[in-house]
Image 1 (cartoon, rainbow, N blue to C red):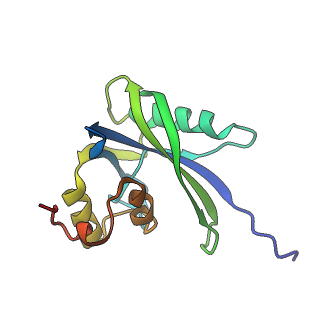
Image 2 (image 1 turned 90 degrees about the horizontal axis):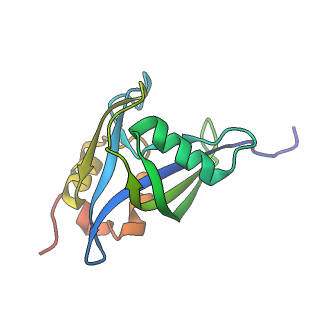
Length: 154
């Protein structure tokens, strides 16, 4: 064995609603996978196919899962998850602009819903996130620390 880690690559979209530069809500999807992620929450997205450009995979996965065409996005985070059973490098994109009506178009999803910071805090407390690294991913929105206790700051 040569000691190299082989990892999959995934691209996920944090679709956000902003007002005056502040993120008010983020779109989350509830997964239908028949494993430890059953009924847990994640962001729309998925694996990058071999030879597929990263941002093409982002657009494809979002269209396949929730039926919208992304118009504007920016890379928000890169999360290497190399010490897992199935190593992955997860690219998270912040998306402000899209075309189409959000709907569940994939058998991989049970539902899609908009959440605010307080709802995300409850998801953290309940253990209903599909991936523990999502708290780190949400930090790019400023949703971190004591604000994830289910309380919205005054």
